[in-house]
Image 1: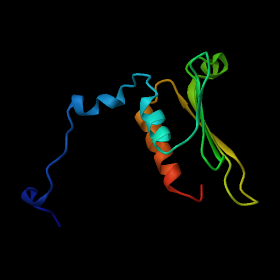
Image 2: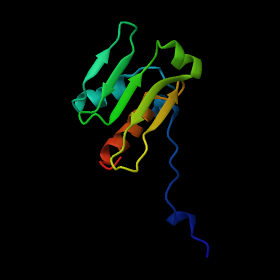
Image 3: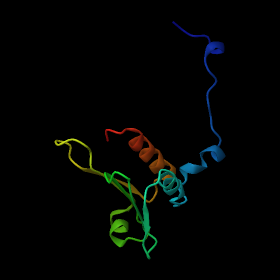
Length: 117
């Protein structure tokens, strides 16, 4: 069966300006604003790295723009999770220097929205 083109939805083609967030500007603001808004404590180091921990202590987020070890591995974001449950193993997710902070914020928003993490 062939659907007439007049019944199909119009294709969505966002302009380059609408996708400007895809070109990372290396700003931590989207993530830090999210976590600050949720009341997560933050610690800034003299080197300009930032460390945050969820109020329940099960999620740790690090912004590591000046950490030599992180740069050596090509990352700037490190997220560590201690799930609930006796058989659940801790896990880590890292994001590289070219990952937009908006994408990291989206990942964290989804993680935080799921209380069984």
